[in-house]
Image (cartoon, rainbow over all chains, first blue to last red; front, side, top):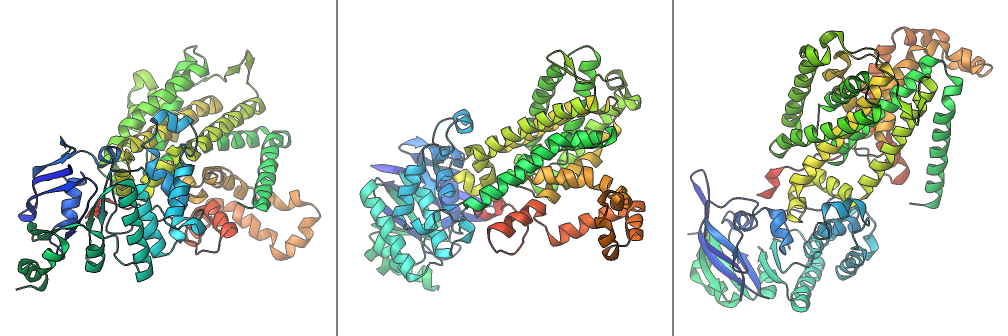
Length: 246
Length: 354
């Protein structure tokens, strides 16, 4: 069953078609990879799906319900989470605080968040996430003091804190060293397996995509040029041309 | 936090609180007046620190809210209402107006937002000056009574000082609770990275408006206490200068640090007074002054006292150039970890989405 349906989505900036007539489904429990050369519209597609940008036309449905143009915070509370291409942690908060923040708005109301417990009952969840992403030794450090790779792990952990059913990851492997990369891939695969969370992953690192994804969509110049099984997509002449140029 | 730090912190806190309680017994009425002014101003600075320091929304309108509070208190109490009524009216009115003033912040940020709030500040000033039928115009409102508490009239400077100090304590406790609650965490997230916060379910629109409204309400409360302190108000003290001065307090004290506004208010309210009477320092020091005279000649102190505003301006400039994270920020970094003293990172803007 499709968790996310994208129908004929387009986004124009002035006269430029960043995304043009893109349609695809994301099925329950799968890991879908989106690849494509730089500037092919991957991140714009993400931002349109997630309400960060308003699509020029087209529709996005979550569990069959239209969510096009819904605010990112409302979409997030429906169980859609994301990471960004660039690192986005809160440097002045500790690792634990970052994680609590990532789920606190899912609990209670504004009033209970003002007068209730300081941790919103999330200390346990945050602790488990810290263990799971192997961040225990830096749990009380400010996120800004962490290494790049650790911040990347924290960034991913935050996306999973509220127990989302759909997670969109924008270049999770960007700038991460090999050991950390294997660690990150492990963790993502484990969450997918154990919690049944559905992923959409934008990635340049082919090894990472091939090892992690069950299906791949290829974008070039804002359009889908191929989709299907990773091995088939890799051999597709149109994909090779898009990457290597004419 | 280590045990030694907690101990050191509580000891310092106790000494300062004891000092504040004992102070009026060693001061002339003018000294008590200045100290009361410090407490009243600190309340407005705490409010601005919520809006600017924690939530990262610049406002050049905090002085206008102090004005609204002061006029609410002056008008109501000179018409026979108790100060408590003015308290509620001013806090609610400023909360509502602050909420509305937050709407531009949803569209513009940084210096654009500064100018929007600056325009609002000017607008309020013009209303206070020109709408004579209600505000008395440039003649202002006089004979503002001191409040009574449980039937006891707080007429003497000392009594009124304690009243204001108690208010400051209550406001501090409330602010402390707020910034340690999940709201405080959401405010910091809003300041550091609004786009990411939004993607994590933080309703940044509601928190932005709330940051403005709460900051404004504290500005109003500060005004409610200011009116009976000076007992005569006209529009002049509530011009843009007050807003700028409050901004200075938040930044000099340490923007985004809980104790920043208290220290900032010391710099803005007490320091000029101290500098002005610098030449009397050696009279106060007694035998110690014989040693000091070699290091710092009395003529230098006389010079400072004569040109105290120049000395004050130089102090503030030097401080901001060398300690951009403010006085508290400097000490905080000094005692926690070795890290270069940098100003807080600028909030990330929409551009990061792409």
